[in-house]
Amino acid sequence: MSAIGIVEAKDLRLTPPEGGWRLERGGTLPEIVVRYELVGTPEPSGANVVFICHALTGDAHVVGYRPGEKPGQDKASGWWEGMIGPGLGIDTDRFCVLCANILGGCAGTTGPSSVNPETGQPYASAFPEITVGDMVEVHRALVRQLGFRRIAAVVGGSFGGMQAMEWAIRHPQDMDKCVLVATAEKLNTQALAFDIVARQAIIQDPNWRHGEYYGGARPIAGLANARRLAHITYLSQSGMDRKFGRAKQAEWVERKGQDFHRQMRQDFKTYYQIESYLEYQGQKFVRRFDANSYLQITRALDAYNPEETFGSLEAAVRQIQSKLLMVSLSGDWLFPPETSAPFVRACLTEHKDISYCHLRAPAGHDAFLTHIEQLKVVIRSFLTATDVRDPATLKREEVAAFRPFVRHVPEGARVLDIGCGDGTLLKQVAVSQRAWCVGLERNLEKVVEALHAGVNVLMLDIDRHLREVPAHLFDVAIISHTIQVLNRPDEMMKQLLRVAGWALLAFPNFGYIGMRSQLFFLGRMPRTRQFPYDWYDTPNIHNCTIKDFYAFSRAFGLKATLLSCRSASLLGKILIALGLKNLGADAVIVRLTNGDQQEGSKDGL
Image (cartoon, rainbow, N blue to C red; front, side, top):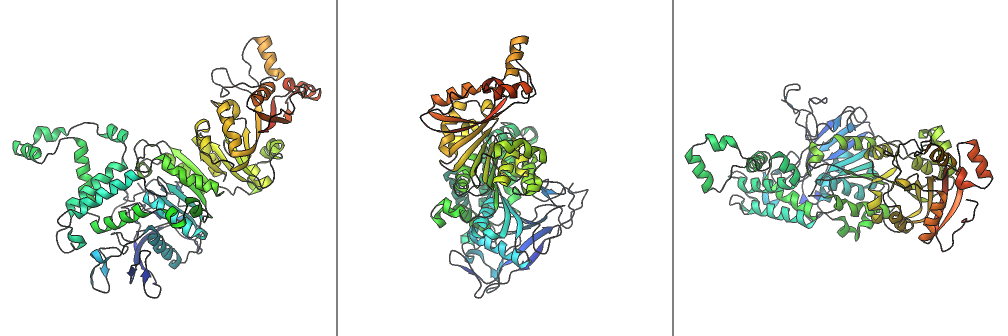
């Protein structure tokens, strides 16, 4: 049951510029009406407004009940139920949600089935070609006409993500944040191919008649086939296997008469549940959607590519000013995770504030609508994040703990934190050193905490994905108590100084006297305050001493400089003072650079 209640759609006739609405491909519309829904109370400036860009065949009814539906009896009909509401991913106790139908659609906003005021007839084939940019301009005009100047965020999934991306590029001053879910800056070739076949299914339907079918038979068969084909791309193979497999519809096989089975064979139909499911999806779709709208929108989808407009993807993202969050889904083969990489890399290259999450979603592309438990937590953390540069959000004890580390980071540096955890260290670097910071972290819970801390965090497997970070992008790479938990620290080191000028490492010293004495006297793997793990559950899979690290660095032609070492015990502090650092220190901070000579290799270790 939705907590939102009934949401009524409203129509707004946009105030046109002189000469009508000129579109990017050269066409003109004399007027544009936009249907939208608003949930919550907006601030006069729009500072708490989150605009939702809907996907390919969606509409403005993003959450709640339509008029005539009964809360408590009917199921809420909003297409993103569970994401929007009090305390949810987009918290309506904090934000006002605005969603509108896109230009060219068939759910209230001007499209091919709308009446052309100049002829009194539906536009049909006379409706001009539209682009994603045109859709964004219409939605922006709506926002402006409602009185909002700068809104909290624009959020979009799938084709809606492309609209949100274009908005952030085209009008960077309009929003504080932008969320892009299960999308990319362009379709891959396979997705293009599916759209091409889908459009052919429509235009080859004899009832299409070049779009002039209003008032007569509609191209239902073609549109239904287009939807069936598209729906396959919204699922995943594993998801379809789990849901349907090769199961047959037993009631059809057992209960229908011989005439029915004969007709099934003549029509080359099967009894498989997946065929019935696709048939249902096709028939449901044609009751609510228009074929001409489908043709127009998919053509705009296929053509979207900001790289063509700006000459390069880097030039396109250079325009962006908002903080960005991009989310990919594991089972999505319409926008597979690798299609997110170019946009993320381009944003990093241009030093934009971008975060990236990769969520496990075996159900496929539509999981961003249907399996949202992780997604709503990620989006909520991002939208409600604290200001990364606000000193008031730092805890005093954390500042004291990290001060010896942070002071080694140059002011204004570009910093990469490998294994950033909850972002506490990175946030302090951003505050104290006014640095542009990005963290890498593979644990989703820690990523969520880092997002809420306001830092840029990329959810990547450090052992595998560090090589995908652009070269020479950072001034310094931070590795704080992470190197010992990596599977292949040697491989990581090969990439480390490729992406950063030098590295600042903090790691536990397993040569510490407390560790040695427990092993010597007790004969068991040690447990201390610094290392509170049993041998079988420790995350430290590579137990390294200071001497080990120096030998390791020399082997790779690197230069290690010991910056500081510490001990929690009085004995350890005495040993450090005597120069026996490998024996006395329980943790160290080291500067690592490229170099032929090893600095400090005879430093009383």
